Amino acid sequence: MIDAFRVSLSAPDDFEGWRDAARGLAEAGVPPSAIVWEVEGEDGDLFGQGAPPPPPARAALAAGSFAVPRDFISLAKAAICHRDPERFALLYAMLLKLRANRRAMEDRADPLLDRLEGMAKEVRRDAHKMHAFVRFREVEDGDGTRFVAWFEPDNHIVRREAGFFVRRFTTMRWSILTPELSIHWDGETLREGPGATRAEAPAGDPVEETWKTYYASIFNPARVKVKAMLKEMPKKYWANMPETALVAPLLAGARAREIEMIERSQSMPSRVPTPDFVPMAGGGGNLAASWAALKTEALGCTRCDLHCHATQTVFGEGPLDARILFVGEQPGDQEDLAGRPFVGPAGEVFNAALAEAGIARETTYVTNAVKHFKFVLRGKRRIHQSPGADEIEACRWWVDRERGLIVPALTVALGGTAARSLFGKAVTIGKLRGEAQRLPDGSEAWVTVHPSFLLRLPDEAARKAERVKFVDDLKRIRDWAEALAA
Image (cartoon, rainbow, N blue to C red; front, side):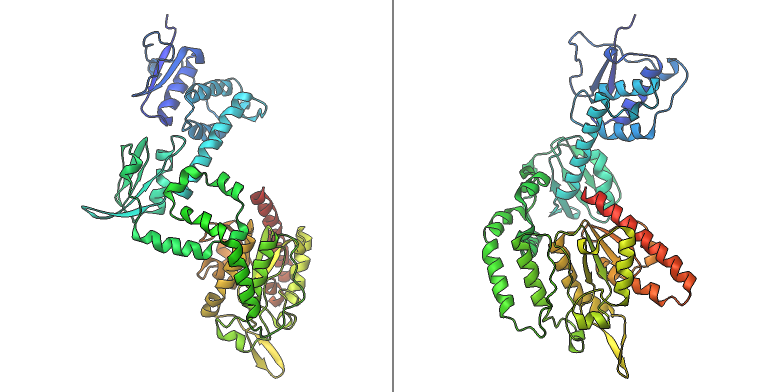
């Protein structure tokens, strides 16, 4: 009589090998206590009583295959990459539960399921860290330029995440070295190699000095929360990232730079008076001062020719801790005179739609892709003209600074001009509308129409239909922002 089976897997993350063995053993009714799981090259004899025999072939096992929910497959593929040596046995025990009760994954009080989901969560978090903190350095080898990175994962995620780097750096020749194994991409083929040491990875390259200069110029101490930063970016990754050496001195000199920036901005002549309306319901003192300095500087902006004819710069407004940041096109006639965004006819449509969608405008930050009114005179009337690509690009600097201070959970582009400003290129609203998008800086965005689009529709039925769609967009934006913030 066979008391135990030995299952030997080819790698610590061998999901296919585990799946085939586990299914066959489950079909044969083998209990978890009768199985020894091991990885080739590792000591898998947990009982110290000699080597149990391997499991019989699938063909020799009891007939009658069974299906498992997709949620379990996803859970198993992640949890099997965890460093916990009991992961194979725990997953097998869960598989047996599912064979007896297909709805076992719905039991949120099950401690076994809770443990496996915790393992899967740790693996996904480790993968996120790998995506964020791998830093390539340029080296020369016999075939030309290669980019090499060093990374120390907490779990067995290197093979799992290799495809991410292949897709992201398809045209580069690169290597990622880790203590367990290394992966190498030559532009066509991905191959594995043995583990490495930190000493085998390059210490730096000339590009890093340029990057450090850029990082120092965009570093915003007003947004730094040290505890949160260490939680998201543990110090174990700092050695791989050239910019981390700058964090301590930049924080130490933050107050002096802030005072200098405010004094410099206050000494600049402003072409028009600052509007009295400056809502700042959220954000600390440093953040508020930085925003005020940025706005004061923007009031004297001459980055394009639009300032020559407009009444004033129309800067953004709203709480500095807003979850949602709306970007419109440009000020209209009334906005240009009032110095505030979205106070004209389009603003009335916008406010009403926000209210219907359950979004309080005073909780959002609202700005425009272009800060000056572009128009042509027809008699005494100033007729709106759409901004050109050069004007959008010139003003994009201000939008980026606003978003850098606010750091919203979700940025919303209202219309094509706003979308071009955010994405850095012309996009089609119809193709992007209706689902979350990823901006070049990695943050979340949503694209919908500008409220003025509704005003321009000549047909009443079309206006009503499009307004319903616009409000639906805003509701989904509200829900998405809440989910991201959570």
